[in-house]
Amino acid sequence: MATVGSAIQRPLAVMMSRQVLAVGPDTTVIEVARTMQEKKVGALLVAEGARFVGIVSEADLVRRVVAVGGSVHQVRVSEIMGAPIITIEIDRSAHEASDLMSERGIRHLAVTDDGKIVGMLSVRDLLRYFKNWGGL
Image (cartoon, rainbow, N blue to C red; front, top):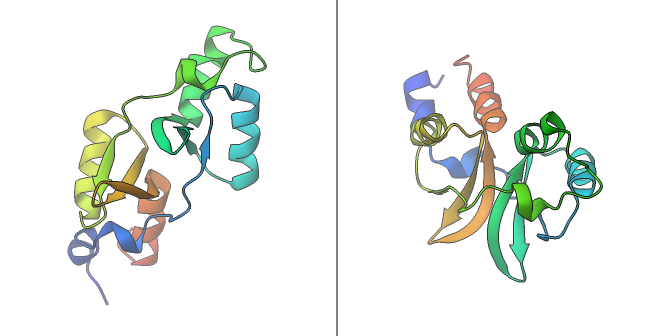
C-alpha cells in the first residue's frame, strides 16, 4: 500500500484531466456556466484562435459577476478571466501543485508538457487522487 508521502510525490500526469476545454473571449458568462455544467468542470481556458489567453473558474463567475450584480447575459468572459494562466509542468508533484494553488489562492492549474497545455488539474482532482490512495 502506498503511503501519503509517496502519493504526494507522484507526477501530475496520473491525476490530472487531459480534457482541455476552452471558450472564446466573447463568450457570455451564462454560456460559460452552461458549458461548465454540461462538461462537469469547474474551470475553462479562454482561447483566441490557437492561443490560450486566460482561464475562468466558477469562483470568477460568482465573485466577479453574480456577487456584484452583473448580467450573466451581457458580461463577456474576457472581462472576468484570470490572466496570465498559471501553469505547472506535468512532471511536477502533487505537493508542488498544492503549494502553488495555495500560494496563488486558486483551485485550478493548467498542466503543461514542454510549455504546451496538455491538461487541467483542480483541487478536486488532488482530493480524489489522495482519497483513492488511502491518504485521506
